[in-house]
Image (cartoon, rainbow, N blue to C red):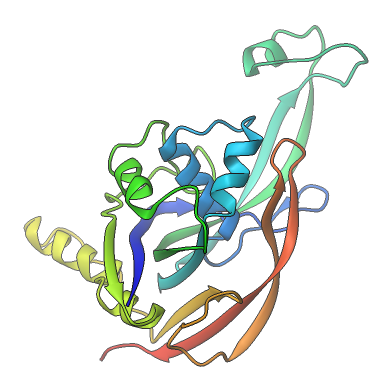
Length: 250
């Protein structure tokens, strides 16, 4: 039996950053490793400049995702006022930027996932520096504000972290209810106001190559660039992500 820490991620909007080129900022269809560990780091109170602690967290966990609802893509036409880049001039806050003498506007298109819901499973590596119990406690009482990829994407349900023992990853996911089921129960209790998110026809699973007992048969392997190398420089390494899909419940 192995220990797994499971928790849910749901919000009206989420942004799981993909490789960005130019003014287009796409989003993956499910939470990335870097986004999940970034949220976990915030819960633990690890700041972005604490490279050593971020690296310790990076080396402590394997990450897997069950996509309970893929949601839909929403594209935002985004404008931002910024000062010109000048030598020996550094702006430390947004207020500093807006107080500059001259401002110009940059344009971008940013993708979001609406009504996306996922269940995350963390499993420890051989010699973790952060335990699952420590992470679970932090997710219940986070030190910093948590959001789903961007600050404009707040959580809309509690994370509900739970440590379970299971023979494999699939069994661990089976022990944790789908987020869509919980949303349906919530809307039913609110005097039938609105409707929950319908369960998808297929449930999709994503896990890392180092997962020794997934309990799932790999259907595809994707290259991902979401393994943290250097947070300050926004550098990420490649990894392989395994994928499988199963028919949803009728």
